[in-house]
Length: 255
Image (cartoon, rainbow, N blue to C red; front, side, top):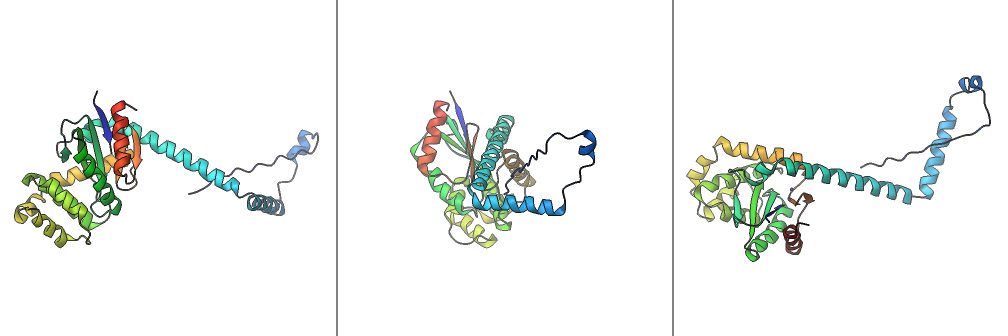
């Protein structure tokens, strides 16, 4: 069975007070004065004093809020994955690596200026080298400025010269600050024809591809790069080789 791996404050505290003053007639209730400013101030002071004396209440509330937010994000991602299978797996404009017929597919959202993407790149690269049954789908998500956009467009344009894998690897392993000049230096270093590359970068279909990636990432709830999802479970952030290996194994088991 083929399994698909898609490798992406505040606290609410309720305070209630119930004051019982014995049996009261409807008229007495209706004419009871509203709490005074002093009463409100006293209530606020009492709540503050309680929280200062029991700060673990705030910690528990924050933890519960985070748990609910994580659950909501996971539900959003699972729904988006089910509804966007074609764009995740079969977008013809999206570059791929590894085994095109692999039994596990990793879809990765990344930015060429993201340091965490560079860390994840090493893990993804070693995983592909060690496992010949894995397919990788690249989703460029240039969110870190103009240099990120230029690099993403250039990387997608390099597909026409059959140099995407080499160019992608060189961009991800680059340690210098990226700008247009540096991007084209890297392109030349992997054998790309620069005049042809610059011409291909003008293809409006490349921008359309990136726009689709952006829209897809938004639906999935991607909040940063890199982002991975495995079998419907959204996994944001960088992952190491051991974590990837386990995720792939779980995917094959249908976990």
